Length: 70
Image 1 (cartoon, rainbow, N blue to C red):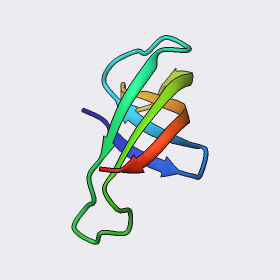
Image 2 (cartoon, rainbow, N blue to C red; image 1 turned 90 degrees about the vertical axis):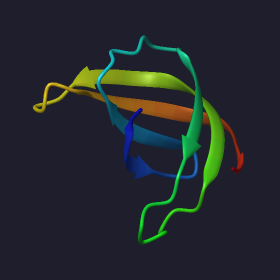
Image 3 (cartoon, rainbow, N blue to C red; image 1 turned 45 degrees about the horizontal axis):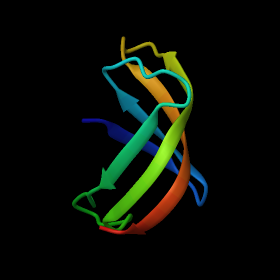
């Protein structure tokens, strides 16, 4: 389980509890929040960066390779 931090047409940044290695393939399901600013999305991607943050979690940048409706 991760929290969506930032989203763009080609990638996203998430925050999670696990260290993910570079190039790790990901299957991603984004569920809309209460305000429904972002629709439900299903995506495939890979890790391009993973760094610890101040909250003792990891900031993970993902490059999206496939995106579609959930």
